[in-house]
Length: 344
Ligand code: 2U9
Image (cartoon, rainbow, N blue to C red; front, side, top):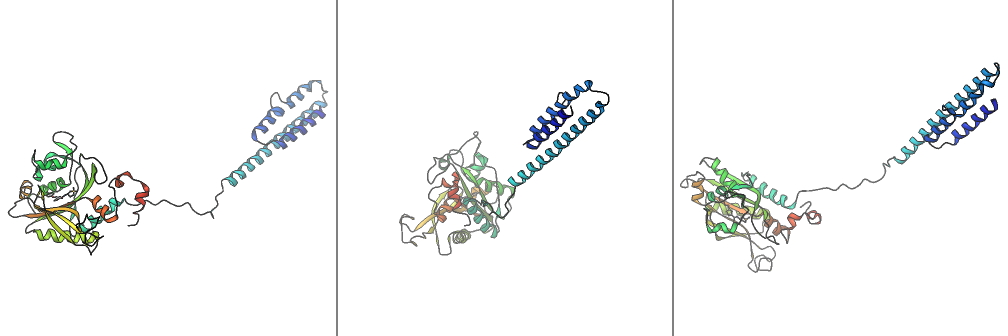
């Protein structure tokens, strides 16, 4: 039995030595030390031994068991150490490698143009006013001198939600609301940027949703010359000091008289070219003196107060300033288009 125990010990130690993972160690433990293991098998034969031999074999069996257990523990610790080192090796970070480039975002071109215009007007004392995109028929049309069935409504075919509610076709209702809040007391000096909606077929120059910026200045003694001076400052600030403006008579229901403003063509300097379609001028915006009906409807005394208003489409401003040939580029978010304007 002594010999058998020695064999068991040697065999166990060899298998522990060559074990490559924890599962193999566990198998070894069960095979040699388990309830039905090799040592137990040997001890079953103890009954046949003499009284003297029994404690000797018992002690030897215990020693073998202890040695195997110790070898198992130490091999287990070694395997864990190797696994840890391997993990550290695999997960090590090479701090000398160059960093991954960070993709920097930036404001959308349209947002930048709107911000430029806002900054200019706020520097001249205007406040930025905003209002709902779902409007009442009253604020969107009637309060702006466009009663029901007025033919000028046809130019602003809209998305109606009910008979009285629609997606606003212009930002003018924001001015009308702000005027009302002032209870007939001037001055009111505001600029209203925002999204507007029209039932239109999208193409290179039309979109069913676009942006507008409208301005309004109501006070005592506001004159057409104030409007012209303000628009001149605006045009030169946005397009360059070398550009000049001209006003042409026009019609809007909410202003009287009404004008459209052109700027001189940069390409031909006024000579006439394909960009300005031969005229030397490019249309930029509409404007006029606020119609007395509009002032009265908003609670202002039109004998005491006068005012000017103007409206423009930031898309058009951006297209002319940066040479964008299709309005749809602003909304389709092709990163190649947007990236061109980082930093402008
Ligand atoms: C109130 C009184 C007057 C706003 C004005 C225009 C002229 C105009 C268009 C230009 C291109 C809009 O984006 S566009 O289609 N706008 O020509 N807008 S005067 O007049 C107002 C507004 C509100 C209470």
